[in-house]
Image 1: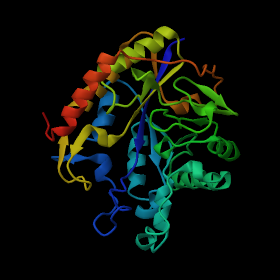
Image 2: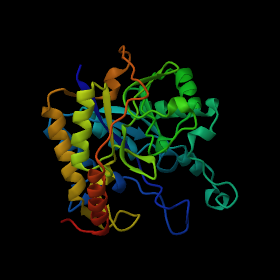
Image 3: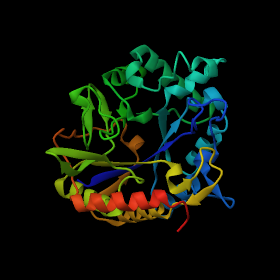
Length: 334
């Protein structure tokens, strides 16, 4: 069987420092997704164009709780645009946005800070958040989402209990190098896993070097993983017969910006190049099958062993660290 490759996109607005300094900052909506430069969308627009140029569809996890601040629009317009272009639309939840439902939220920050951690929410609270997300999709005129991704990839077993109660059977909540769940059974690196009746596709996590006898792990993202690492991981997964590789990105990863308000933007040619090479490779390489996660809902899936792991040589990691450091320190389009 080919190794399925999920290119997933967390599509969300930015708090932009509002919780740190509400007098100086306010959340940023569409500019943090579209990332316009010279009238062209170098964020979402570039991402959609690149996927479609290679005949690929992405799985877009669209954050819905931002409606607590912005109302149903403008994320509704963004979601409908993505859906109209044929991509997979699924649910993303950042509970911190519900903080804006308090009219006195700036004053509350001093004694009752926001909570964006789903592991600190009860099953009942999580079911209610999932239902709110589904209701938002309905108001947007879109089919109900069938796959969940939690904000910040924070997750615990309570999330899966809530998903079962809400009737959601598929998730992509785990990215072990971004957030390590407390429960050992959720410390999954790669593949496809049945977690108490919910099918979980973790964002792929791999090892890149050892230091002091300890293994360092990295989660597979466009902004954090070099193209040589991606190619090595994809071919390794295929050769090992792993069922799934999940890649994570965001629209804002394809630009560089100096401020939180997304006013001074420059094209990030490093991340654009990685996306282009990834799409070209996935669309043409034998043994790899591009998929949308939503397509797998209801299908019988062989689950993976938790011991599967992928790795890249340490020199690859060192080269990537140098390139990323130079790229982030140079605010320009070169």
